[in-house]
Length: 247
Image 1 (cartoon, rainbow, N blue to C red):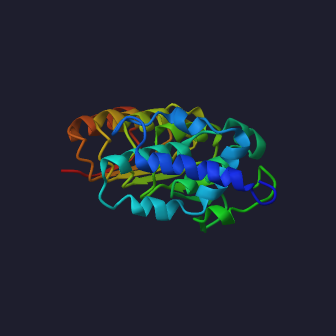
Image 2 (image 1 turned 90 degrees about the horizontal axis):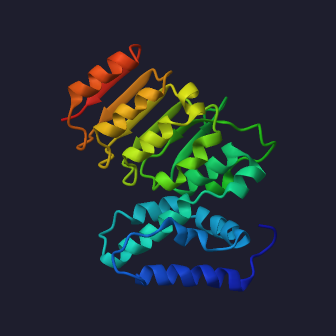
């Protein structure tokens, strides 16, 4: 990360990019997250810097019509964006590493004691590792997916999360989040809106967030049994304010 990257490094990334764009390998096949792990740590860190400059624009491009080859490309790219780098977490701490992951995927974060949302990957604040603690996450239109959720393991101060139009969020993501002990203690508010892969199973898993005070659910076609959800939260979280805007 110090100094200009060597030309062959950029070429290596561009080569993988081009191969993914062409859909080399099995056409339409699901991309294994290990595809993103094949680069050495130094190259992955450069890759993180390079891709960190344009995540929101790339996420916007995904709204364009998809072809079979482009599905492979975006799957590969999302695996890169979501990959957990445990060395990076050790070097900079969980909050900084999670901030980089979230912004790389097009989400935003707000730090404890601040009102301003952090949107720009390249303008994340620097300073002591324990200075900036994530208090809120807005993942609207982001490409976060389950393989990146290990980034949340060390977060101790997250109180609010908003998932809106997150096409890769699925039940396992909510189950994984609900199993993280720190979040079970800290989480107070959550909004889940227009996430088509979420079903009753994922929503009910949120009852493990024992201090949750507010939950808003809207436009979730996979959620079918509203009454069952209401009863489940009345039993497990009687003080929860549950708001539903579901068909």
